[in-house]
Length: 502
Image (tube, rainbow, N blue to C red; front, side):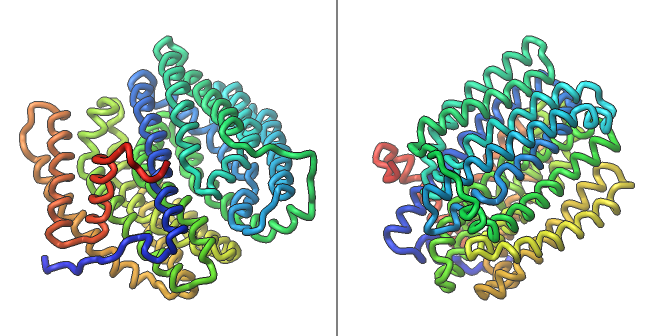
């Protein structure tokens, strides 16, 4: 392989001192909060996966489709509009707060009343009481939406970390305890309800904001142009992200859906959470420099390359070790999910990059363009779903991979027009990092061919080999983003008590 060009920049060089400190502090705490919460969730998911069956997880996935769609309506796009709006005031916040509660209550009522039809649709009688209890999540969550958005706008992820650090262990231990006592699928239902209830209560404790007795339709209307398009975009994305669950649950079985969702959530732990960590920091930061195109372009370029430096080796590595990983972590009863997980790792390579590109449009208030792109991508997804359907679950997942490739190209279209950062330029910046991640994957795969005394030993050696080989390759080819991340991690570990983010 010929010598790769070094990438020489630091992500926050394009910002002023004050904004730079905000970005660093926000990114650090966002990373800690997001991965800390999800790591704990994953630990409890492992325990629950060992105690429960794939079918029981499939039942929850069937209901969560309707909850997720309704939750998108609860936010209504106004939460993002509050972040994007520079001069948002208390009246704006109160108006959105009461509107969210009204929509949350309406969503709870609709799902509660529709529970018999949901159970009939899937031919699963158990879903009727499950759907009714899960519908309460909507009205519960509506009380914490504004507090959550206020913290995001302030880039105050330290407070969100404290909330997560309290709520996640409590709800997780409760769920595991109930599963151990034989409550089956209800242990998952109760875990969800307790988690969301405690989360909202602690948000009210940690955030000083309180609603006033005031409401303004004019205030909502001022944000409707931006928020409504984000609502439509979010609704489309939620429907189509969950339509695979809908089809698999309806056409195949609860167990098949359980295997698919286990693969999806495992990939989500790494790729989606890493993306969310970066995205929820970059959106307010990009919004603050939305009128400075050169700085915005430089920020997007650096955000993508830093994201790729971490995400590419994670996805390639997970794809290579997936069989050993599933066997050791979830036990052999979950091995049918391995092919799905391997394919979804390809989706995990691309989806975070697509979302960063879409953040450019949202930051500039161009939610109309975001909606236009989503309509195109969803049409493509439907076509690929129909084509993959006859080939079973594996055909549906392959369609997702093809859709992810097309979506990335489409999402780059307006980024090229608005800030002159085309897909070709992005690929040029990302190719060195991806090449090294693929080389690392080949090395780890070759190690996996060796004989080991156990699958856990094989997995451990493969993971260690991947970490060491990728680090060496990045050092040899002088990948600057890796070196910056490495120095930051070493600095934080070595000087934990002096972390400048308190």
